[in-house]
Length: 105
Image (cartoon, rainbow, N blue to C red; front, top):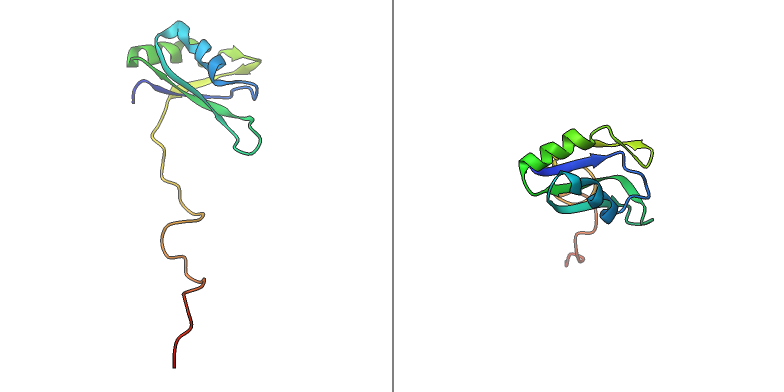
């Protein structure tokens, strides 16, 4: 996990291939993914890059954090594991609702 990076403050025009190009100067890029809005197809303004090694990831952080790309100062740091979501739908017995057929007498 020491080679997976969070990249924030991306321009809304940024795409996977452009993000990949930003990181190739710092080593072998395993993957580059800009997170997109499902409904609009527009960038959410952040993404993830996986570098080949932890040393390459550190080099990318040193080289790109705070650098201006498309007029926006990038935030680049080690990605943290996704935290479990709470609330919303699903999971547990939320109570209420339809429980089945009619009872017979």
